Amino acid sequence: MTDQDTKEFDAIIVGAGFAGIYQLLKLRKLGLSAIILEKADQIGGTWHWNRYPGARCDIPSLEYSYQFDDDLQQEWNWSEKYSAQPEILEYINHVADRFELRDGISFEEEVTKATFNESDSKWHIETSRNKYEARFCIFATGCLSVPNKPDFNGLDSFDGELLQTSTWPQEEQNFSGKKVAIIGTGSSAIQSIPLIAEQADELYVFQRTPNYSIPSNNGPMDKEVEKEVKSRYTEFREENYQNGFGIAAMSDEALVLESDPDEVNANFEENWKNAGLGFFGGYADIPLDENANAVAANFVRNKIREIVKDPQTANLLTPDYHIGGKRLCVDTGYFETFNRDNVHLIDLKENPISEITSNSILSDKTYDIDTLIMATGFDAMTGALTSIDISGRDNIKLKEQWETGAKSYLGLGISNFPNLFTVTGPGSPSVLSNMMPSIEQHVNWITDCIDWMIQNEKTVIESSETAEDDWMVLVNEIADMTIFTDTKSWYNGSNIESKAKAFLPFIGVPVYTEMLEEVVSENYKGFIFDKVN
Ligand code: N01
Image (tube, rainbow, N blue to C red; front, side):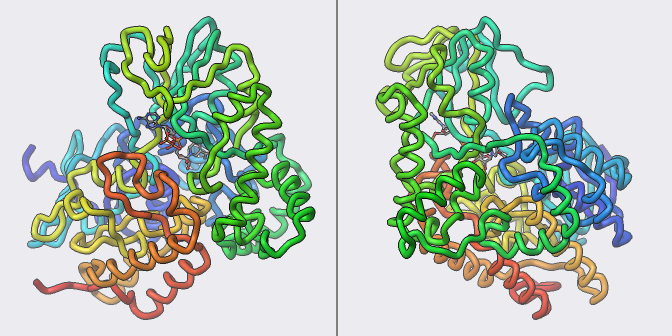
């Protein structure tokens, strides 16, 4: 390919999920030329890839939706409280059409390399098909987009059907008449197991660590609730973003440890029925105090033992760590599924998988199977960035810079990587918030920043190393005040053996929002403009 073939834009956006789509719209409104480069053959990001049975959002759809356009939020009607993946995909497609964004997306084009060229201050980008140059490069690559594929002994020799929840085929899968194994018991498994169990002859669930899960009590959209929310949508969104996790249900200021135990129990019962993820925020000290957390955890442990009839299975399904330490799950009939005769739970802590053969898994005994489903999670928060060959100033590689732990200023900018922005990057509330408003917050911030640079004739922006270091110290200091750091989870990289262990999400949406605003009001404090080497 010659240089003449290089396509030039003001900005390249990587990824056509909720973040990329909105970023394209905002940059177009600013009058910039921009293109989204998307690996998949269609838009949707996480909602395109994760189409396993039962996939649905675990934040109510009235909250898990865009707020940037009032007509859009008034006119779109969700059919259920928690929408299923096909409806969410339909919604993002609707948004792309409504705002005429499709012609700004190039599909089946995977970004493989991005290099900052100091002589022209531009990003030179290579994909599976083309070369590009752009002043700005915005990674809208999502927090949970690179699958974790454990290398089980013999996996390559498996001859049956091998599926991964996070790269699920577009064709419908039918498990009737089959013996199915699923490895993993995180959210993806917890959502899919009840539906697969209804079809499969036998379902073997290989669990390493049990998870806490709260019943979704999902159902058709309550039209009265919808009407009420829509009558005050702006206010509703603003109120939610004042809560620690940016979610409506998580607003209670009361403390477990200072409340009457009977009252706490009654509230837990109510939240178990109605709150979903909000169960975790039902009292302000559940995320902060291990004794308060233990009261909430015991409530859920008792529920599991009440639901699951076989005591040994119930015990195996009962977590022994802080509730919320691993991402809380929201389910439809998960624990009940283990009362079925065709569902079998295998404890990998006691009996790890020693081998996978052409047609079986060897653990405490040999399990003959037709289908193997990996529900083994993601290289979360950093994987999508470190899997691309990104080079910044002085040819510094992002992967190497992050080898001892990812660092970012505000989750938006990375030192040595000028004019590169990340939407919901490490160090921002991202996965510990409602992703939709957090995406909009970042896209608005990035767009305003670019606009400010244009107005103020600045060519290059980058975060200072000091600002970045201080920011990550703060992220970890806040996390250390909570129960989040004591548990092995993908929040701190401990689900991937080779990954540096560091807690990555910023906890506390309102504080974060205030700090973002302060940075802007002080002319982008912590960022350097037009750095001279
Ligand atoms: O992945 P996970 P997920 N041997 O990492 C196990 C979001 N999400 O795809 O805990 C054996 O939670 C691992 O075991 P352990 C949500 O934020 C949202 O389910 O490491 N087992 C664990 O059980 C969620 O948190 C929705 O001991 C191995 C499982 O695999 C995030 O995505 C729906 C193993 C992985 O669980 C990730 O969820 C779905 C090994 N070598 C997901 N390696 C919504 O509702 C891993 N495991 C919006």
